[in-house]
Amino acid sequence: MSGNQDALLNGLVGLSRSLGRPERDLVILGEGNTSVRLDDESFLVKASGTSLAGADPGSFVKMDFGRTLALLDLRDPADDELGEALMGARSSAEGGLRPSIEAPLHALALTEGEAAFVGHTHPTSVNSILCSDHAGRLSEGAIFPDQIVVLGRHPLHIPYSDVGLPLAHALRDGLQEHKRRVGTPPKTVYLQNHGLVALGSSASEVEQITTMADKHARIMAGVLAAGEPVYLTAEQADHLDTRSDEEYRRRVFQGNR
Ligand SMILES: [Zn+2]
Image (cartoon, rainbow, N blue to C red):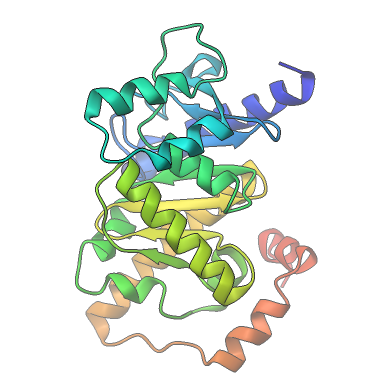
């Protein structure tokens, strides 16, 4: 790989190990996966059976965007047929690592979703809400300003789908509908009864989105225990959204507000 691609791989390893830290309670065992766009043709995604906490440069598989996205056109493939097709979507047939079953989801997030880095986790805090009849509360509105700055004005909620191709189809439909409605892709995607997908322009943005989504979900759990959420008005949210430029984000994270 080129020097730039080595830097991207190093960023992906660092992000993966950070998201996998046990005390953060975002994933356990082999849960969750991460990816990075290398160029117009290829991306790296976590290999199946590896853990985020123990990620190293050998934990990722290089995939071809065109062949991975073509998996979405398979009609009801059997498990072994899909497994073979996933192996065939690798950039190179060398090596035995099997890509994550969520490789098509990552390919979509890195193309249709316009992300450079993607982090998919199963945070206990977020799933406590997503597995309840209040799941929609996470994406219905904003309850505090930094939520909008970090998670975006319009998070996307995807109804429950089986992992693999059904989930990838649901994400594709959701991203396309979201872009038609809002004009830009979401930064934050909530998967009903499943977990969180952070779409970042950098590894550190994926880190920030995941950290804020965790905090937001813990606040929402407290809100729902205390009463009903009081959402900011559309006018208040729009005002914050138009201020969520890079300079404002920097001030938020340096605490100079
Ligand atoms: Zn998952």
